[in-house]
Length: 121
Length: 283
Image (cartoon, rainbow over all chains, first blue to last red; front, side, top):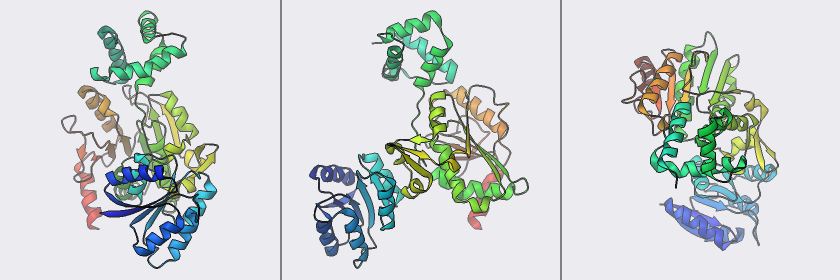
């Protein structure tokens, strides 16, 4: 079973994402901000990170940059999942090493289709 | 609840005009899709609309009803596999066999809002270097003018560009227009669109090296399926290809196309194409 770290400061979004991803057979861990996520990753790298952008303490982009510099941090597939839906944010995320990008609002079909594209399903 | 003679009237109208078979358990679709047409025309109920159909049979109303009942769900790189087969098997074979003429024609026979022809155009654009000097035409047709108008604009919602389209391709080939995403002119100009009914004569279409006819035959009865496929066969040369939807088949419908073993959705016109595949696999 592949592991997915869901990073979002909204408890509701984490719950929705968890439900969708558990149905797709992922083992889910949660983090409420970038720092929390980075600490979790240093403990054990997940196979994939579903990542919000705007969060307190450390935002998604800063987390991604820090993750990619961490030992083993180039391994996880990172899929952004954010309300930031303009080309400049998307390009910045991809340049920083994100593998895919989901613009909120999302549904099961979008998550599934993006996870297929990055080879997780 | 719709009266059964009303259901019969509309379903025979749809069958005659588009080939669409409407099963009795889909009566809710009639109600949900035709009621807005009634309202748009200032009528209060579906019954009043049906009365209008019965009494006047006006062409524009019948067209509007037919278009409203067709299903236009579509997404970029739908099912992935057919597009991989197109890129890895079909194109290499055609590039070799047409190297003299350097000309290819591709037909998307149920183009809907354009995601399928644009996905093919993107594939071709991505391998541009190999295609220098080639003249490749992609024709998208559909029975519904409304969806073709949308296809021509190339404007898609945020939801539509997230179904099947890798983010790198969104960045590369789309521009943000307000809340929407528009496909770039370089891709848009690779596809031409024309309104076309698959029940009509194919004689003016010319020939095609590849036909995509995915997820449309499922709405037809057996006889119509056979007729459409046999008309298509006449447009494809002996080493051409046909793509059908994942839930569709030629088995029991026609022997003019052969399923390509192990390549779901891909059909060849002769055993010759199957040999090409074994050669490609070997080489």
